[in-house]
Length: 214
Image (cartoon, rainbow, N blue to C red; front, side):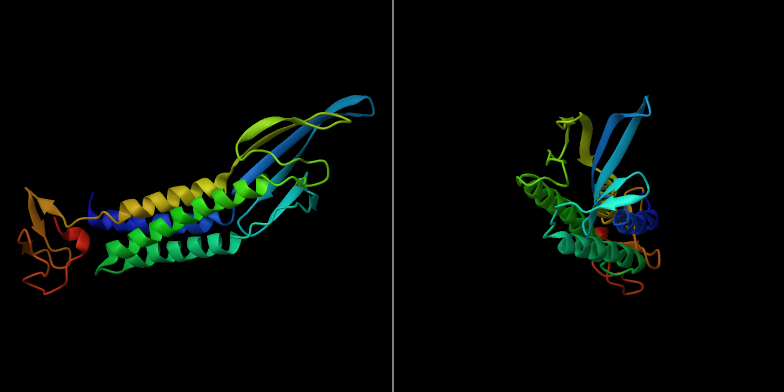
């Protein structure tokens, strides 16, 4: 793929990483059937966990507190922000940008791994998440309740997967190489023909990107 296009991919990866912070990273969807004035109606609520906050939403009106303490939440947010910035910055500069982009991608992927570890340890605690809402598995479905049965489905949500995709895309962007025509390398700055082992362009004197080396 053309290096210029891969740089655009790096910009997209960094932007996706930032967007991931606006969406929940883990969700527990709960539903049940209630008899309201003789009519069976399905009710629902959602427990949404972000790296920096969490809440149990009943419809669109009420958000109840939940007992989740993401001790590494601040670190997760910082990793995503720094990783996203490195991915975008590395895509905008010319020299030695691939290493910067790669580090950015790895930081975003690390944030996703750290969130999983922290969330898993939180779900192993014995206290309920909220009133009559038990702790469940990271990925799980089932029922709970005594007075009446509630069904639930728990899963890693949109924000987590966007962070994962953003980190992977950023890493892919770091693999940009100098353009080749018929097996020959050319400088990405001035277009001059390069030798196989050149580290500097012989025409413009620019230091070649590490990824431009064979």
